[in-house]
Length: 339
Image (cartoon, rainbow, N blue to C red; front, side, top):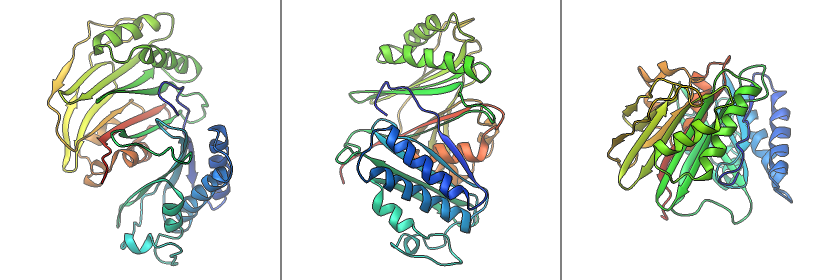
C-alpha cells in the first residue's frame, strides 16, 4: 500500500480448527494478487499463511491470523498471534525444516527464508507473535523508513470498518492519524474515509490545521474521533479530539499517555490543543481506537509493551479488542538503519 492509498480492512482468521489453514492460504494468495504481486509471489504468500496457521492449529491455543496489504509499500503481511505455549528454544525452532510434536516451530524456518521481512517474539507460557511480509522484488524497506505496524478490523458481523488510519513521511518527520467514525458500518466507514482523504491532502500542516481541515470535510457525515501524532527530531506532538488513545512505549512499559479533548470532528470540535514532549530514542508510538479496550494500559504486560512495532499492532488487537466495535491500531517504531 503506497502513501495516501486507501487503507484495506484486515482479514481476521481465527485458527480454531485445522480447516482454517486452507482459508488462511487462499486469503493470503488473493491479497497478494489484489496487490499486483506476480509470478511465484502469490503462491509464496499462501505458503507463509499456511505454515503460520498450521503451527497455531497444531501447537497453540486461542490463535488467529491477520492478513492484509503491507503498510507503505506493495505487498502482503501475515501476522500470527496465539496465547501459548510459546517456544522454549526460538533459535532451534527457526531452523529450516525443524519440527517436533511437542514444540511450536514447524515451518518457521521456511517462513523466515521466504519472507523479505520477518519478526517473531515468544515467551513460554504467554504465547508467540509472528509477522511475515512479502513484497515486490527489490522493493523492501529502505534505510530511514519508519518501522510500522497497523491492523484494521471491523466489528463482528460487519464488512465495512468505521475506523481507519493514515501515515505521512516527509523528510525526517512522521505524521500519524487514527480516526474512529461514530458507530460502525457503512456511515462510520464513510466518515473515516473522508478524514483520511483530508489528512493526505497536506499532511505537513500544523496539527491543529489538519484537524480543522478534517472538521470541514466531515460536516455532512456522522462525525468522528481523531488522533494525530507527529514525530520529528524536535520531539513528539499530539493533538486529539475524542477517544482515540495515544501512547509512547518503551521496553519497560508506558512512558507517556496523551489525552484527547472532548468533542466530535465534523460536529462540535473545540479549538485544538497540541501537547508536546521530548523524543526518547527507541520508543514506539501507538495510536488506537476505542475498539481496543483501554483497560490494557492499567497493568500492561512487559511482553506486550516490549514488542517491536510490526508485532505490537496485531498482538494488541488480538488480546484486547472489543469484538462488537471496529478496532484500529497504528504503531511506529524507530527508523531502520543499515547494520
